[in-house]
Amino acid sequence: MNLKDRSATFGRFDLHEVAKSFPATADSLLLDVYLTDQPPASSRLFRVYRGTPPHYHVGSDEFLYVLSGSGTFWIENVANQAEFQPGNLLVFKRGVVHALPDIITGPVVFLAIDTPRRDPKDIVFVDPKDGTPETFIQPSTRPQG
Image (cartoon, rainbow, N blue to C red):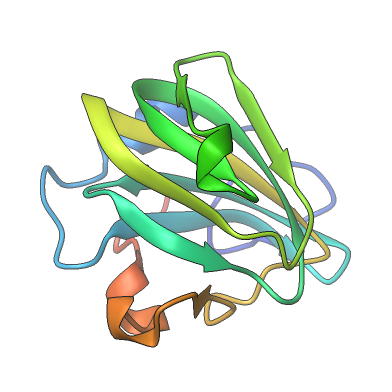
């Protein structure tokens, strides 16, 4: 499936191949590519380059499947901080504060399923000095194919 046609009625993606296309470094905290993008839900693959400060999303629930890497993640309260590794699924509702303070081994790559669709600008930092949507996540410039 061509990633340009994210509204198709079906798709087949080799997530590890897509992940290989992410650069080794990025100016933003994350870099992502939308695999599907429809109003009821979107799916994205993203790489985390640095720890992410506490933030939340207003418009969608998030399901994060760890494809590669490990680190620490907390949901709702820093007291819930725990390590994650490939095969883990992290789930939280819209409005729930979460953070990824530490990358232990990289690259850290997640498959994200957002319901409903997550607008790329839907990011609210608990401390506004921590960033903006533009410094948080940058769309991938991965060649389509």
